[in-house]
Image (cartoon, rainbow, N blue to C red; front, side):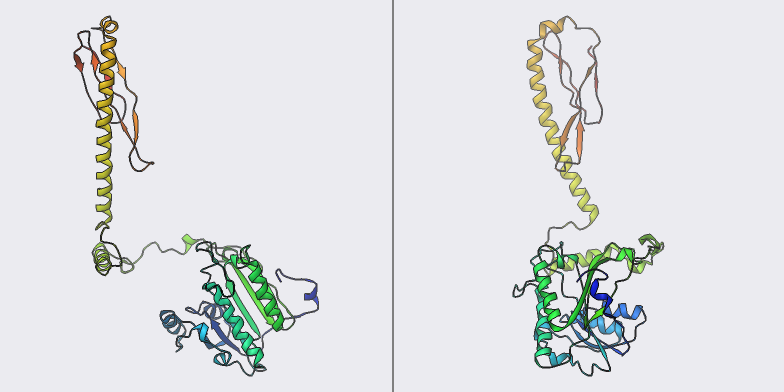
Amino acid sequence: MQGQLDIFDYIREPISITNPIRLIELFADYGSQAMALERIGAEFEHYRIVEFDKYAVASYNAIHGTNFSTMDITKVHALDLAIEDTDHFTYLLTYSFPCTDLSVAGKQMGMSKGSGTRSGLLWEVERILTEIRDSNGELPQILFMENVPQVHGKKNIEDFKKWIDFLEGLGYTNYWQDLNAKNYGVAQNRNRCFMFSFLGNYTYKFPQPIPLQKKLKDYLEEDVDEKYYINNEKAQKLIQTLVDNGTLPDTIPKSRAEQSRAEQSRAEQSRLALTEQFVNQEEERLQTASRQDMTQESATCGQMETVLLKAVDLSINNPKEKIISNCILSHISKDGNAIGKYASLNTGVVEWKLK
């Protein structure tokens, strides 16, 4: 169910935790949900984690002072979680499964059972909880999931409903809602779906939004130590290493400056080629026209004339970059000889004067 309260909430008991918490994190990564518990001052035991990435597990252990090993969710069984003595301990199981195939930033392949997608690993949690139930084991009292809002979007809503139906069949009361970090004191526009499932008939209210007190600029340091930057020499060595081992192609410029110069050179060559072509075409056209109008031009020969030529826009490679060329063409006198010809690549208009 979504939202704060419904009619059944008036007869349900508000959730409260009085026993020590044992935290089980599936898809643990570096333990962000354990960190959240620590930040609110909750006392809990790092009981089990399931995470197959050895670097994530190493980070988890370094951050939380634990000594966990890697575990593959597809190979985990009910006994591995060792949930017992629930009368004296509250087991909080988190299962924030990968959003890879749900997020708008990905291919959105979905989370259907049997799809083989990473987001489809959600159904491994179903398998584990089913094993606990079928073996008459003790289910965790609280489940928690955080994921992108697309988890209940149009493409995934049927799978989401199936998941909720499954949990209700186990006896869980479910509450889910989209919350944005910017509405809870964090200077980040991060909208996520949060879902709590309580074993039994309990009521729960999501926290109310709070005014944002700080913006991102308030967290940024004005003076940052040089050790947090990588200098050009080290950057070049790193790039060369990646090129040598085949990670990067051997076609990238050695530096941003070199890349900029190469781009400018290509643009200049294209500009000059097009300008020369245009000048030649216009010269030929005007010479032909001038010979045809020779009689008319003789009447004005010797007078001062000004010919203003319009700038020509030439789009060179990048459509945002327009190079304006002024092409000055021939003005033919009564005897057909060219009095003057001048070509300028400068911006503006060019003034012609007949002698």
